[in-house]
Length: 250
Image 1 (spheres, rainbow, N blue to C red):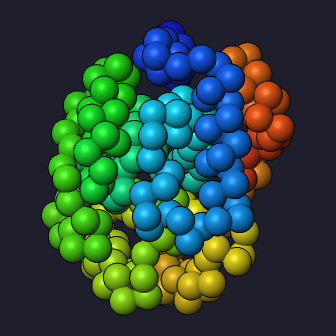
Image 2 (image 1 turned 180 degrees about the vertical axis):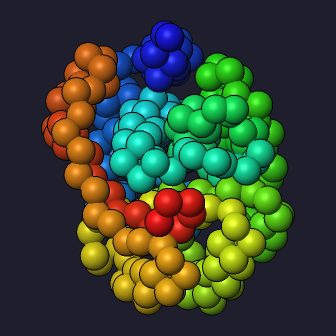
């Protein structure tokens, strides 16, 4: 079977380097890294996707890294077993997280990607198509999204950007989803300062039979992704994240 990830990543480069140079995207990768690490207060202002360079950096650098992390976590948890027919991807961005999960399952579920950013939704639609997945997108605020029955849920690098009230409401929905027999997977950065709410969420997930894990994976990145990583002064030979999981096989 061909490696769909590699084909998708090559297509991403062609798509986004058609109008930008490698160096322009490299500078934008560095700018995004600064926002994620040092200036997170700018996330709500839309600074991450402000401008063609940052959008390209997000799509062809960070989204593939997120894909690889989600794929490794899903495989480690055996989380693709007995999935419902639909995956709801909350704060889907360019669609990489939901796609990574869906590709591990047979039969492959359809994906519903939710995000507020119209550019990200168009990119997610392209991602699903390029990877041969059935997927639709919806412009909506994750804070007011209702989770349908018989639907798996993934929220990758999304919950940490919400206010406390919105987080509390979503936690209630996630626990209800688990009680109905559908799986929920939450993935966030491993840094504690970004997830002060994590311990209380972990306790709630464990109370319904779920688990809380910190993950570190040594990954041999594709050459072009490795080149961008090095050029931007970063080092993703190891990718990390923490995950809350409740589903079959806990």
